[in-house]
Amino acid sequence: GYSTQTILATPLLINGETVGVLEFVNRRGQPPHEPFAPHEMDWAARFADSIAALVEAHETAGLIETLFTRTLENARREGVAKGRGRTHRDASGELQSWLKTVQAAPEHCDLLSLAISLQAIAARGEAERHLCRDMLEAIARWTDRRRTGESVGYLF
Image (cartoon, rainbow, N blue to C red):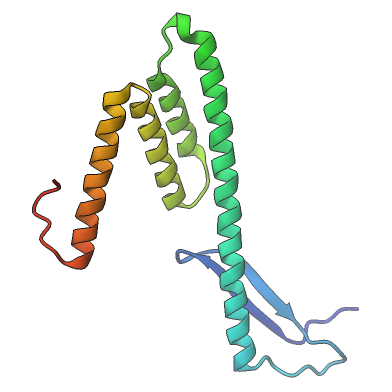
């Protein structure tokens, strides 16, 4: 039968959270197997970082796909229910409720929550879209100044 002689396990980390493990078990050939060398451990860590990035991208893509599907479903229902007084706020609330049930990285959920909120506000009209854009640009300028150490006393 199969017997584990040596194992090299490296965590797959996304923002400090373990999402999996990359394992190398034994070496080719017959035992006794040489232990894994430090340079092999370094390579395993590099591979693990790359694989973790792919896992994160895959999870994000799935989350975005589900969000788009839900958004389209809500838009369709909204069109059907328009005569019954259903609003963008109702659809946005449903998406926000759904997002609270999603198991994903908190940063991804936060970004999608922002997107849902922006869409709900922007759907209310041109003035609201301009206000959103202006506020986001002001926040971006503020964070740029904060990052570079400039005075950040006011947004505009």
